[in-house]
Length: 339
Ligand code: DAH
Image (cartoon, rainbow, N blue to C red):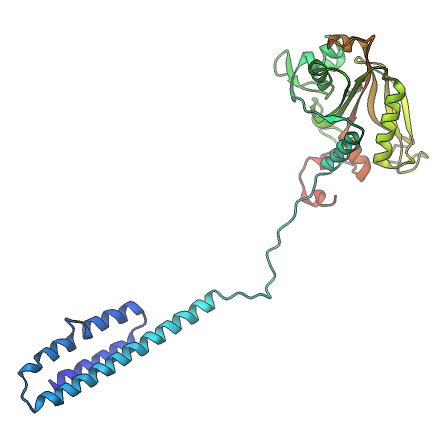
């Protein structure tokens, strides 16, 4: 029996030494010290020993048990601290490492220009309204006094969806929608995309952006249009900017004018930006044609108004000295992060 005990002790201690996980250690404990364990089985046989042998074997059994228990508990402690060390190692954070940098987005130059426009006109009491890009010919042309034969309606230049539905070629359609819906006084701007069948090059794109303006009230005069656009230009380019109104023709305004700004690069002496002209064409405008008012149920004897259409790309390109329109649409962050 002595040998058996000695044997159990040695093999168990050897096994404990070789164990490297908690589960195996617990299994071993049950196998040796559990109710049906090896050591327990031996102790149960002690009843058959002689009176002299019993205390000797009993003491030895206790020593073996104590030793095994101690070995088990030492091993358990060792396993725990090894696990902790491992965890600390794998979860450690080097606070001196460089962090992950998140790139902040930037506003697109066209949006910057648009926000400026909105804020300038809101400051003058205008409301910003929206209109559909897929539009009916009656709003884009007919009611704007632009009849069938007009070159602006040419299918070569315009994306028709059906004979009567197209991608709008100008934001002026929103004038009609607004006048049909609202009673004067009206003061709105309406920015948005417009579409023309142009080949892409440095100054053309089949999709570009305009901002329409419309004011209808009693006794609105051409001088109101001039004053309004002057304020707009000064807010945008500074107090010294000069405007030039050039007679023009639009079917929906009478009289009509194209508006040039004095080149803010050269101050009017002529440079590559203004192509030596000293002036840069910025927008179309005029007094709303009486027929357009009548088309929308507004009495031209009682009301008058002005309208204008500004190209946003032109403003952005002038302001930021961008020489190729394509840059505005290519989404190249090397370009876009500059603004
Ligand atoms: N619709 C014109 C264009 O696309 C711009 C324009 C001119 C708008 C005169 C107007 C206007 O409202 O009165 O070139």
